[in-house]
Image (cartoon, rainbow, N blue to C red; front, top):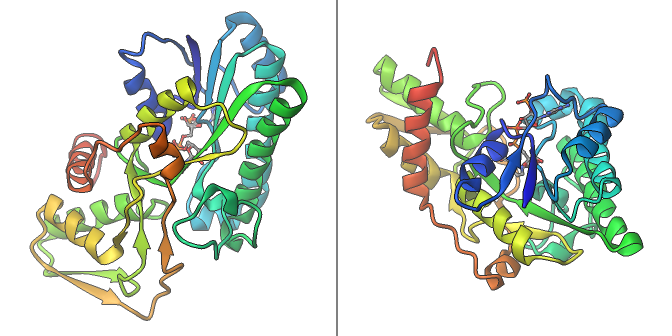
Length: 306
Ligand SMILES: NC(=O)c1ccc[n+]([C@@H]2O[C@H](COP(=O)([O-])OP(=O)(O)OC[C@H]3O[C@@H](n4cnc5c(N)ncnc54)[C@H](OP(=O)(O)O)[C@@H]3O)[C@@H](O)[C@H]2O)c1
């Protein structure tokens, strides 16, 4: 396998790099400075020159609610362009297998829980990240179209909320788990007696360590050949209150947690149905408390000016 990992420096891409060790794959990478994935001609030239047999599309414009709200044009257009260049270019260069990574935000806002893959396009999306989700849905459809029209073995996987090394810990733009790590750490450093968190703490969410996602991706490259997208998650969720307690324990913050219930909670539950993936023999290996402890250690070692 001559594998091109697009986006190898990101949260997912760097986990794919770690997990590639021992697979026997010859891995190809390019930084953004070396290859701008928005440039179709450059992507084609790269494919012709390097001839990968396999591609994982882990490059995307990714962001939190505020960035998605403020820059809908970039989230729609850049994601469509990056994935179109990578998917169409791969077919034209004779790539044998391609894995496109989407996200659980492709599913309708009020999809029945746990969310099955066949919920796709059965209802309205969450409005805040609709442009991003529409781009991801277009990526799934493009892979399906290449399979139907040309027999290409292009597949799509939809991961749940991810966390791990190389996560975004910026307090303004980070997702909930890295945001909690930063918040409890700063409170511990300041000797604060309490930390206030938004909402009631009752919504339920699912968290997958990114190394487990990476293992799932290699399994899918080997064993999954269906046009239908496949969910990747643990199949288990926790309340935000339980998550906060786990992070507080990992960080060693001994103060109280106060809940500001005047702030919005969001969807009460978001959990993926992962039976399709489990049928392939996959199980997550990183327990949430261990994964959080490791993520905190990575934060201490790598995030400056905490
Ligand atoms: N994070 C999550 O919780 C989560 C959950 C579900 C699904 N996913 C999916 O997983 C995929 C990867 O997400 P991530 O969290 O790993 O994102 P990330 O950390 O932001 O990484 C994205 C990567 O894409 C690269 N990239 C973006 N635009 C590029 C361009 N024009 N040219 C070249 N490279 C470009 C970035 O390069 P630079 O290093 O130069 O910026 C970066 O390496 C996305 O499709 C996302 O939807 C993520």
